[in-house]
Length: 518
Image (cartoon, rainbow, N blue to C red; front, side):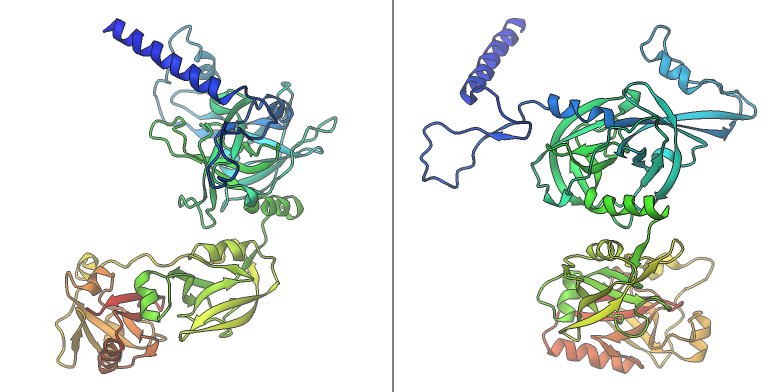
């Protein structure tokens, strides 16, 4: 067994050597160089050239290390009772980390001091430092530790929880080494990147990899647009910079996917196309000042697209307009599909909140919408998204089916009255004053009330439930069960496969669903 392994290893070494010799010596600039393929006809232009990767990032890293800092925070937390602290084996190389972390902890009484470490980087020689909000959140004291060992107390300038970014300020005796932002929009999948940070308290750690994907949505916030990289990012790298091969920051390392807590090659960074404007606002105002459109939106699914007569599923479907918002004047209405905002294509729902948030407050923008199957351009002046205001976010969580809503006799389907009709698994009735009171429906809601939902029906699968109100079918208002039946028959006659319905909850919240007609 041993001899076989050694023989295999020897062959493997020879193969590796052969490959290395075939590619030739590795030389060139810091950014990736492309090797020429011997004896490749120059007329074959579509053959992919092999890439040697970066020759070395030593020179690049040397010029950047001094601008990347460790962020040390401490906060007092209430003691949780008697208990033993985790112990490191005596003589372990990690004993110092354990001693530092649990230093001063009083067992069973009072408060204890908890320390944590993260990363950051200097963006201005005068002392402005960028990091993640979760690195400094709740901290009583923040200290910035520089590669030469210098420690400076930091003041929090501003923070943005929606993108997990914060800006700190230190007061140095001399100008600091700083790095500059690059344009993350120019980065392509496969481009080389380098991360520098403080993983597990090991400051000044350099890792390299490529951009694995762009525009990742990991449900971390309303403006998710992460760069994914396979450069090793671990706990403690949070807030550190992700560089391109020109030494420009194109991302702020923020999150990882890891069952074990260590790097498995899936890390995420906030792109500078989003972060740079936020950082500038935090420095200038101490807060963010985002544009606000004042609409609730949901995705345009294939079913919704077909029911609206759209050629493809794209854009953001307006499910409601916020009272008092910038478009509460009827410029944009529930049921409109926003396909372009200020010249930017809205390919999917989450593109709209990003585009709106990046726009200046008070800016007049052109918005292209689809209404009644036709494109229209409307002019909108953006408001300001206050911290307590509602952003343009998806409000499309499917409502539970009727059988999941029964609790203590509430919302249970009453026996269908005689003046009802049944269609698509729904039992529908006129919205009388009595039913409005029984179901707790707001006075402002108009339409046809759902009094029963058949289990397993297409309507139940779409989340329709008892007590909700059908306001529109196929963009036509319905005031009686017969209106619903007639409009559904019209849609079938037009060859539609889905019925596009505007549904109002008892509180008046609107959403759209597409119910299969087959």
